[in-house]
Length: 308
Image (cartoon, rainbow, N blue to C red):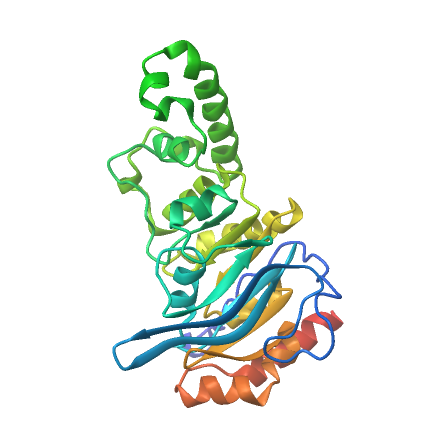
């Protein structure tokens, strides 16, 4: 056989969850428009505005995040997604606005207190402590540790039993995330994808109610992408709410129950993934930013896979 007749392998399809879960239904009240009320919101934000000099990064009139669902926050680069994340989690302060988590106001609440309330986040650029081992990073994620208090820390009998419980929980999570073989390694030695897994696993050490993931797939080796996808779906199965920022529309349509679209700091569309991808405002936002994305092609694939 000549070299000209050598078959060319088809490009690999984007990874998808191994066993797709049914999408949540009945998340909103009335028509799916920007700011639509949710049946059971876990976050409610009103009039949130953040400017940097003459640039308005976030200008959100009203948005609600549904409980026990996976919500994707999407939009072109510079849309204000990460800034909104920073505001909701206490890592930045707004110029105006108010928001609540699980019925409790978060306005002016610092990040560490927000985390203690059950709302944790990961970062686009991972924040693993490189000179600590993987296991030590995990143990730092547990909240309410007696040994952190000066006087209690002087008496091992007070904190030793809790320390053993925390370490056992860390071992269980590391096994689940397939990082147990790395537990004694320094976090700095992990690959980018492994650091993403570590950050997600460490977030679960605090038993969160809401997990917020800032571009969880950014810089991840394709070999680990499937694992991350499945872990995100598992969070919902375990009763948590997930809000994540993502540019990969293939990923969004497969795992998100609800999609919120931002452009130029504002929420321009909301709805189920398929409806959002067909929304003219969404297409304008992406094409207007010259994004290399074919929403029509993605929608077509979605229909084909649903039929199969």
